[in-house]
Amino acid sequence: MTVSQIPGITLNDGSTIPQLGFGVFQIEPQDTVEAVREALRIGYRHIDTAEMYGNEKEVGEAIRDLDRDDIFVTSKLNNKFHEPADARKAFDDTLSDLGTDYVDLFLIHWPLPTLYDGDYVSTWKVLEEFKSDGRARSVGVSNFQTEHLERLAAETETVPSVNQIEVHPYFANDAVRAYGREHGIVTEAWSPIAQGGVLEDSTITRIADKVGKTPAQVVLRWHVQRGDIVFPKSVTPSRMQENFELFDFELESADMDDITALDQGEDGRTGPNPDTFDKVPS
Ligand SMILES: NC(=O)c1ccc[n+]([C@@H]2O[C@H](COP(=O)([O-])OP(=O)(O)OC[C@H]3O[C@@H](n4cnc5c(N)ncnc54)[C@H](OP(=O)(O)O)[C@@H]3O)[C@@H](O)[C@H]2O)c1
Image (cartoon, rainbow, N blue to C red; front, top):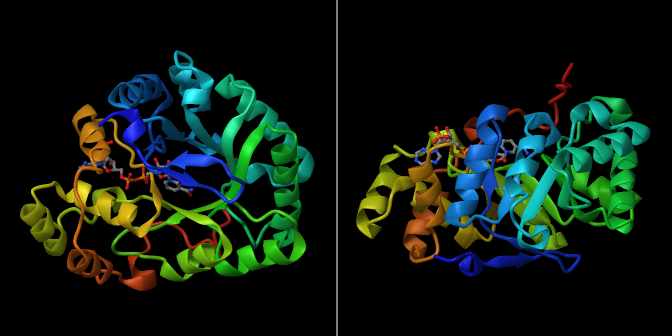
């Protein structure tokens, strides 16, 4: 598998994003340079970080050896900095820490509807500024529910290019995905293997045995065939390699349906509910 064989997805602003990337949530700063360099060596060219992950500087150091145009970098606004002036300063700091003039994609990390008077709309308008001045090639949101997306549609000019939300076989999140599909917003599936929590499921291991792939490859392939973007995280080189090998096989529709049927609705959610999540780093 070469880099050019990773499919690209065209966003609503005409930019292209690699469908497979590498996530760096919960990678300690001291491990990040090595992990990202290893991912790049394997062929990943899309890195998903965030100010709240505390490793933007190290991501920046690891990507410095490549031509900037050969890599797709996403970062996200810290929950602390939703006020417009704070968001502008935070974005300057993100670019400075990454050591780059632009990010390919910048997201509001959480909507925080119970904080800041529920005013994620003003925050979104600041991201529109970053898009128009070219320092964010694309802008999007994360953890937005349908009503949050509807509000942006009613009150602002720019449709987010992506919505990065929790999605995996136990939490298919299909209503929010469907809103995105109908409105040109691509879904990015975070925790795509539920941090390992779906890999021993008997349906998944049965399909993995049948197709001669690992459970992680089967689950990641299920996401890919649903059209979502994925960026599994691993600090283990053999797993990084395994997670990269998704484009030389296909799941038949009965297997896709069996995996989708594992959905447990809200009971399957592993992370916070965006309607009530209000954590702001100190
Ligand atoms: N926007 C948001 O609010 C949000 C929230 C969560 C995550 N994310 C993004 O989504 C990315 C991925 O989500 P995630 O990190 O929560 O979870 P994940 O990718 O679903 O799972 C990562 C965990 O699975 C293990 N793993 C990875 N590949 C494996 C394999 N092939 N076989 C067995 N175990 C494997 C990793 O272990 P080792 O590392 O020890 O190998 C790690 O413990 C994040 O890094 C981040 O970029 C975004």
